[in-house]
Each structure stands twice: as structure tokens, then as C-alpha cells.
Length: 306
Image 1 (cartoon, rainbow, N blue to C red):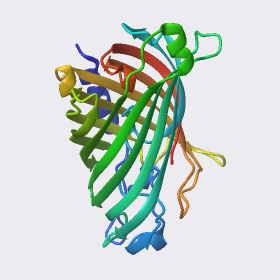
Image 2 (cartoon, rainbow, N blue to C red; image 1 turned 60 degrees about the vertical axis):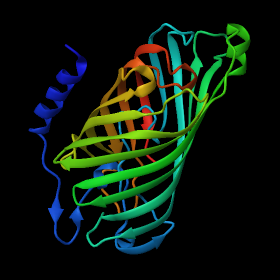
Image 3 (cartoon, rainbow, N blue to C red; image 1 turned 180 degrees about the vertical axis):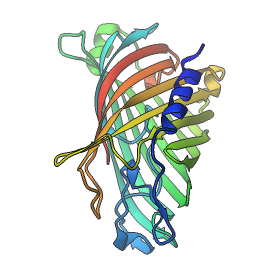
């Protein structure tokens, strides 16, 4: 049996034991639990250069805009290696938001940039293997339990110099522009999302960036596991799946689960949050220059919310 059905059953079983999110007509649907807090003084009306966002980042998407560092160990038919350090650096800058009429609802335009890099821990100098650079323009929307993201983005990928010299693998240009659409719905502590991508341009030209994308998340909301004077801890878990036209729609599965840590009391402005997550991945590689290689890995990482 594939791991996805078992993981889904576990999420649903845990969801029944967790409390539902708060709801009030004056505040609307509270989605601060995902770490994209919108302060009360920016909740309605037009806000230039706003704080927070109305769309929650995807937990298990390997290319979600998080900063993180992780150790992964696995197997691949390519030259990727077995022991890797995977690092991501990301930032999002809100340009404008039209909020309301309820707290947390609205439409927002932002700029987003990310770098994802993999390092070979078995080499003497921890050689850089591959780096993916993403620049996006996301348009995000929320209305109650429904949220959506429409994003135009560019990705370019490059092999590390030391890796090219020792492996003698010729580096090719690999870049593309795509238009992505994701629709998300919150159901208590569960979140479902689905969508896809349409390729606008690619180099090499034969690369087809048509993608189907979906997933399921469980994020404990009220009643954190531990509440003390130092930290609040919540359980989170997620499953993400993608299928790409260029790879005959072969699915890639990404599973993550662990604990999110924040300050013990919610403040008026965005909280600093970090997560300790276990990783499992199986399918075509999420790393640009190796996108046609099948990989399977497991590991653990520390993630930081924007």
C-alpha cells in the first residue's frame, strides 16, 4: 500500500481528537495558527506594505517559501549522493492588501524570493550540488474558510562548480516561467488544497512545466500540546503530491510531520515560529538540474516561518 492513504487516515484520526478553531462574527475566521498573523490595525481596508498574508504557506511542498536547514539521507539513480544538507532561504514582501470585511479576509499582492540548495556531506568540502532560485509575484485571497493563491514565478537552477569539476557532468541551462493556481479550504484542524501550474516558457524548450498539485495538512490550533512561560508547542503534519506532464504524470510524494514552537501567548503582531519536522520523499527529484532522476529520502529539518 502506498504511504499516502495510511498517512491520510492517521491525520483524520488525530483531527477528531483536536479542538476546532475559534470563530466569531466580529473577527471572522481565525487563521493566525499558520503563522501569517495580520494585526488588528491592518485587518480591514487598504493597507500599503502590509504585515502578514491571507494565504498560509504549504507545509510539505519542497518548494514552499520557508527558510530551513535539514539533513536528508536517501538513494538516487543520479549523482546526487546519499547524505545531503538541504538549505532554503526565503522572504516575502507584502506590497498591498485590501482587507475585510471580516478579520483575516482580503486580497493581497506580494513579492517572494527563495533559494534552495543541496550540499554533498560525503565530500571533503561539502560541495554544493545544485541551487534553485525562485522569484514570484503571488496574488493571495481569503474569504472565510476558503483561500487561494495565483502566482507567476521564475525558476532557474545551477550546478555547483566543485560538483561539476569532480563529476564531469555538463551543466545545462535549466529555467522556466510558470503560472500557478492553488485553492485551499480549512475544515477544523484539517486543510485541503489542490491546483496546478501552466508553463509559460522554458529552457530547454522541450521541458513541459504542466503540473497537478494537491495536499492535506493537519495543524493543531487551540489547546497546544505544551504551554509554559517560554513556549507553546503544536503538532503539525502534511502530505503533498505533484505530478508533471514532462515525467508522464509520475507522482512525487512529500510527507512532513513534527512540532511547531512559538511564544506562549499570541500577540497583536506576527509571532516568531520555528518547526522541527521529519521529512520523507519519494518520486521525481524536486531539485531543478536533477528533475528527471527518481529519488527517495528521509531526514529531519528545522524550519522558520517568515
